[in-house]
Structure formats: C-alpha cells, structure tokens
Length: 280
Image (cartoon, rainbow, N blue to C red; front, side, top):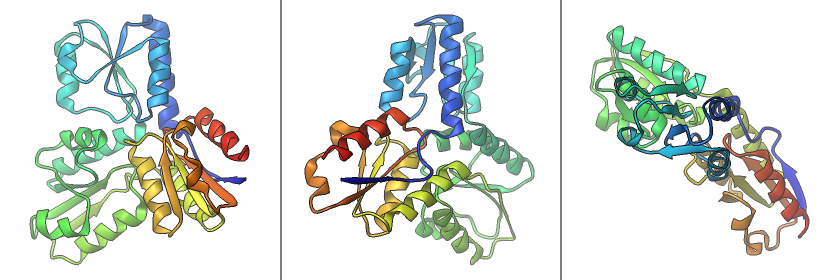
C-alpha cells in the first residue's frame, strides 16, 4: 500500500519542552521523586515512557506528599492550584506550554481592563479549566448556538480561544458574536500556529488519498480536531492511538493511505504505523 505523510505532523515545541522538563526533573531529583499533576500530555505511550523513567502521577494535589516535586503539565493549572502547592511546601516544576501561559496572562489582563472575558473552547479540557482560573466569571462557549444563550448583552467582551482550536471554528463563533450589539469586542489570537499548520497539512493531504489515519491520544484535543477536519473533507478517517488499533478492514478497496499525527504524538508511533501499512 502507498502511504503519504502530512508535511507537518507530530510533536510541537510545547510538547517537546514538557517532556524535556519532565526528564530533567527526574534526573535532578531522582526516579520516583517527581509527581505530575495529571498526564503531562494527552498521549498514553509518552505518559508510559515517562513513568518508566521514574515519573509518578496524581490527579489530586492533596495526595502528593509535602516537600515533594510536583510537575505542572503542559496544559497548565489554575492560580489556586499553584497557591495550594506552595502552601503545602511542594517544589513546583512548571511544564506549562508558553502559549497556554500567554492565554492565562491575556485573560488576567482583559479582566483587569474591565472586559467580560469569553473563552472559546471545551469547558472540560484541562487547558481551558486552567486558563479561566485567571479571571472571575469567565464565559466559556464552543458553538455558534451558545453565543445567544450564554453571552451577556451590551457588554465589553474580551475574547480568547483554546490554543488547539482551528481558526475556522473560532472565526465562525467570532463572526456570530460580531453580529450582536456588544459595546466593544477585543479579540486576542491565542491559537497555536504549530497546531494550525498541522491542520492545514492534514486537510491538504485528504485530497490525495483514499483513507486518512490520524494518530494520537483519544483524549487529545488537537488530535480530535485533526480527525474532525479530515472527516469534514468527506475523507474516510480513523483516529487511532497506535498500530495495534488498526484493522485491515479500514483499508479495504483503498490503494493510497494518508497519515498524520497530533502535536502530542511521538515519531516512533507514527513510524511503526507507516511500516505496518507499507507491509500490507
């Protein structure tokens, strides 16, 4: 089978930085002495790799022993979480993506300037939960329908977006907001250009193949968005984590397969998948 790869795919700099920070913390403090507050990134194979290196993981700050080293994952954390970690004398190792930090700072400054802060994003995503902690009463929306339902009328709005969202999705919602009688709208571009480049490359590849495979954690927002965009191109698309999830029926009657990978997907996962397809 012929396999074509997206020009832009795989690890972004934020993920690379987070893994490097985690590895350096393990080397400095010793195996078993660093605890990540949730998965460092949304990719099970990378999480397992770091655990084998000696990284522990906890979803609850209160269960981490005092004076331990706590790793803040790439998605960031709320100010309250950081403050509580310091209260408990935990040594903070911050692996927050720089673009997530930018969004946190923007939300804080928008509130200080008197804007009603609005975040376009998935309210259940850890990045969004962390970012909206930097201002009170942030409104989170993620669809055109929610604009009328959730946004207060005639306010001064300050808008940010989840870093992994596609520009088209954000633009669609912003266009709906602009149609309404708000006194002022201030929009900050908090989208990750690396993620955007991967989205454009995946969509471009869809026109060249019979079937698309999007590799990455099933809970990874940017990988989910890649799969959604490929399906929107009317291309048969499968979102898989690894080669073991592949079923030969997925490529029935196909001669050319396209492969891309989310920003938290390691190269070894992609190469193993490509070798498997090429061997068919």
